[in-house]
Each structure stands twice: as C-alpha cells, then as structure tokens.
Amino acid sequence: MRDTLIWLGLAAAVAAPIVAAAFSPLLQWRDGIYITAGFAGIIGMALLLVQPLLAAGDLPLSQSRARRVHRVTGAMLFTAVVVHVAGLWITSPPDVIDALTFTSPTPFAVWGVIAMWAALAAALMALLRKRLPLRPMTWRQVHMTLALIIAGGTIAHALLIQGTMEVVTKSALSALVALAVLRTARLIFRRH
Amino acid sequence: MTGTVLRAGDGAPIPNARIQMWAHTTEGHERDQRSHGATLTDAQGRFVMDMPQIVPAFGQPHGHLAYDADYDDNGFQTVFLRPIMARASDTTLDVQFVLVPA
Image (tube, rainbow over all chains, first blue to last red; front, top):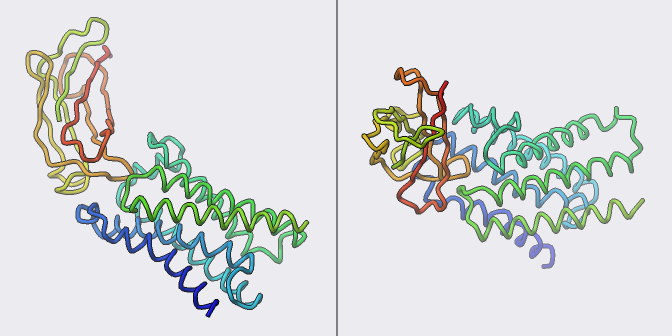
C-alpha cells in the first residue's frame, strides 16, 4: 500500500507539468520540431526529480535495481537534453549559437547551457566510472556536485522562461526537484 | 508595431528610413516569409505597421527590427533591435531607433 502510494505520488509529480504543458495555447503557433524540443526539456526536468530519489534509495526498489534504474533514467535524461538542444537548433540556429556562446540577450539561456555542460560531464563520469582514478566516495561527491549544478541551472532556466510550461506545475516541480536534490546532497556529503 | 527613427546628437527625425521587422506571431515562425515585413518612416520619422499578434517564442514575447544602411545613401550605421513586450497579452510594441553616422 505504502509503495503504491509512493509510485502514484511520483507519477503524478512527473506527469502533472507535462500534461499541463500539453494544454498550452502557445502550441497552436509552433511546429512539430519546436514542440518536441520544448517537451524534451520538460521531460528532462521531470526526470531530475526521479534521479536524486533513486540515488538516495528513497523509492521502493532494491539497491541494485535502483542503481540500474538510475543509470537508465540518466541515459533518458541526457537524451532529452540532446533532443531539446537539437530541436531548438533546427528551429532557430542563431538563437542556439548565441546561447552556446554565452552571448544570448535572454537571461535564461545561460542557465540552460550551464546545466547542459554539467549534464554532459555527469553522463561522461557515469560512462567512465571504472576508468576514472577516483575513490567511490569522491566519484559520488563530484557526480552529486554536478547534479546540484544541473538542478539549479535547470530550475533557473525554466522559471525565467515564458514558454509552454504552466506556471503552478512549473513552480511545484522546481520546488520538488530542489528539495530532492538538496536532500540527497546532504546524505552524500554527510556520509563522508 | 510603431516607432520613431531619430538622428543621434540632435534628435532630428529621419524620413524615408526603411525599417524591416519580423517576429513569431499567431501566423507562424520568425523565419517564415509571411512573418517578415518592411515599411518607411514618414516626415516625422515615425513608422507604423499592422501585424498579427506576437506570441512568446524562445522564452520571451519579442519582436525583431532592423535598419539596414545598405538600402539608402543616408550614411548611417545598420541597427538591429530585439524589443521585449512587457506582457505576452500586449497588443502593441513601440520602438525607438537612434541612428549614428557611419
């Protein structure tokens, strides 16, 4: 019963912002690629809620299962980032070039780009885990630091944007992601 | 879309300046041909152009305007502007150009 409630709660937290965005009036004036890029961003942000919960063992899964799901979710998250940036690039190359070179006039682009590089670094760390000359605890702390940058950057990026995300579900997801990532960070940095 | 085009220094209006504009509107993306337009300033340096409602794209409700120096021999520098609407519900956008001699 408790497990079911946890899964239902998580499913609702992840689905609510995505479903709410599907009702955005802005969608009717956008083409398929731009819409896909936007939803990849929203899905990626929603997955940011799942990752720290899996890492902290907060979900009703065995430890080995949670680790495997964390890896799969990480791969999905990174795929979402790639689809987001690629879709925006196809929609408007100059806007994305400005963002990537930190010369965009928009205040939110810089946060998204910082989160993107941190996500790439976190993903590479996961792929090269065995080959990196880091002690497991150090690896975890560096990976967690990157996760904090990803979460902070993504929240700032999303909150400053007037886009398809609905304001209440966007704020709620931001708060949940911040809580989850800070809680897991506390566990990881305390364990030392 | 409304605005004025003035000369730097003395603020004198610049007539017959060609102002180009483009935006993401209810009729399509910025890059779409039908989202592009151009008009000339009147004797008071003012320009007006009716266009479809601008909607937020790339995170902000904004327009793009340009004064392209290659279109006349007045000797000013090219200017690109990217004004942001205070609210997405705004139905007008007023833009000031101040042109500097090349």
